[in-house]
Amino acid sequence: MPSPSAGAGNQEERMQTMSPFETLMMNRLDSFGENQRNLHDLCASNFQRIDNRFDNMDARLMTLDEQIEVVQNQIFDLQFADDGE
Image 1: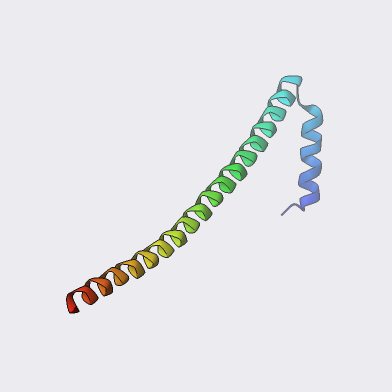
Image 2: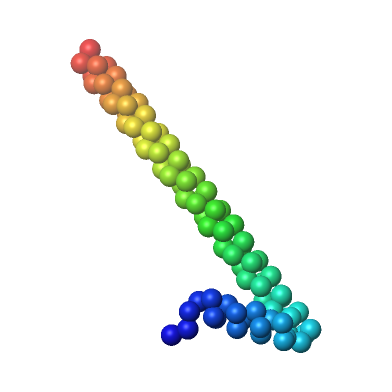
């Protein structure tokens, strides 16, 4: 099995013998790959922010549910107190 350095040497030799068109296409493919990585990172970041916002909204809704339950209990207690008089 060839060592990694031997493979790197062959790649360097290939890069030196490429035509201008091949070099241009390799550069474009490299650029395309970099753009894809950047887009992936941006999407992952945006989805993480969206997920965090949903978590925050869920926590706020739970707090609202608890507050509504307290108010409903207070209304029930007031109705029960009015019925007892």
